[in-house]
Length: 295
Image (cartoon, rainbow, N blue to C red):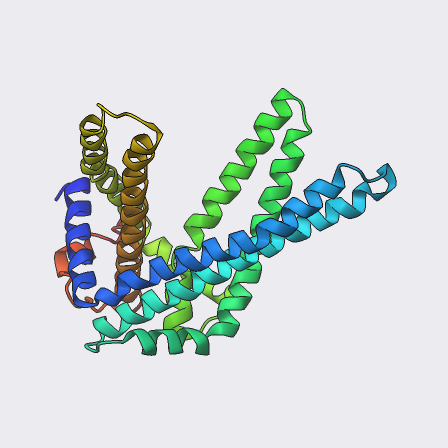
């Protein structure tokens, strides 16, 4: 089975799992709503401090710089907390399905609240890393051309590595109640077994998601042509709005599909058992073959 044909198979099976637990689709939308509300709430103090910062004397610049970093940290913390909380709900629902059960919306939310101390601890670490990357970004802007490019490149590498090594943190948190440090170790261990398929899943599903953008673009374009005779401001807003909504919905759904397959990979790597809905061939191909050394 080729790389992308396998990715298509992964996508289909992951969506079958979602079809059995349709409440899985609720969590990303709840996360998006709470994230927007939180962002709006944090926007007002950000605008306020930006406004008064323009008129402050030089000797207070450092203090306001620290306030800026504090606001950035709180923003990252809040968004990480929301995302992780609802991702825990997703993974718990999938875990229950793989074990032959059927988690409800209430039971998944209750489980996430029980693990809130772990979620908060992980969010603190995630926000700290986010702040460090933000500081690097700010530092890069103050450098010359070559220095800025190098620091931005370094920031990109650090961010990419962080995203990769923490892929299986939430499953580790859900299955074993692991704290941030232990969850990262577990994630790295799982990744070392499934690195090929994890990357294929990431980019393969990304390609499929991109291909599914075409119908949305076609609908928006067709709507634009239908409204072309009027072609006023609101017609343009409607056409663009339809595409943006389609894009957001598609992205949220694929985020769930990614979480489903990540959980399946985690289970197979950890226990050797094939999760419900998946097959031996697909799961065994997810693991890199160990090369036998010959004399």
